[in-house]
Length: 119
Image (tube, rainbow, N blue to C red; front, top):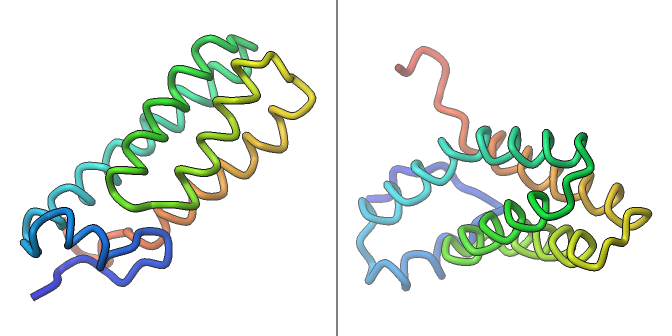
């Protein structure tokens, strides 16, 4: 039985295929990913504010890989766009791409909030 909430940001069926149909494994991967997202977001935000394009690119690359593994296509695409802009030192393009990435992160976090009253 599936224990993860329904998500529009993560393709659950594709993720289950990658996890050989093992719900508990897929749920653990998603839970670990979601629990790390605030840290990743904070690191990316700090690098962006410091105009550290190398760190922005590395953090976006790491996030892109994690998102791809979890079948979170919108987040993967947004992280790819940020990584590309940072590597190309395209500062004018980075800000709107960063905003799209932040929105994708927020979407996943909102879809995977534990129910109130749950430890």
